[in-house]
Image 1 (cartoon, one colour):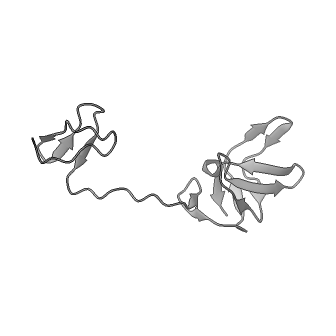
Image 2 (cartoon, rainbow, N blue to C red):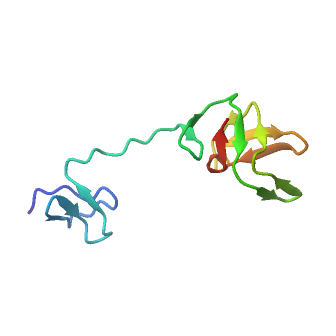
Length: 109
């Protein structure tokens, strides 16, 4: 059999070389043999890629609708808490109260 590595996406053993790229016909993933494995870090990042930490101040980047109203874009939120889960920021917003936000809708202030 061949000495080519399996596909890093779907682990298919049916990979082939196409010039300098390795190709998986099963999932159509292309990669180079010298490409390092992506490193998964547990850091929560904002929409610009900055690492968020407990106690940071953030700014909401777009209007966010929720059951009883809307959080306007540009709203500043102080003293956030990073939590695990789908909505990874817990905070208190002035005039609204406690809320959970997704980090993709905020930027670090």
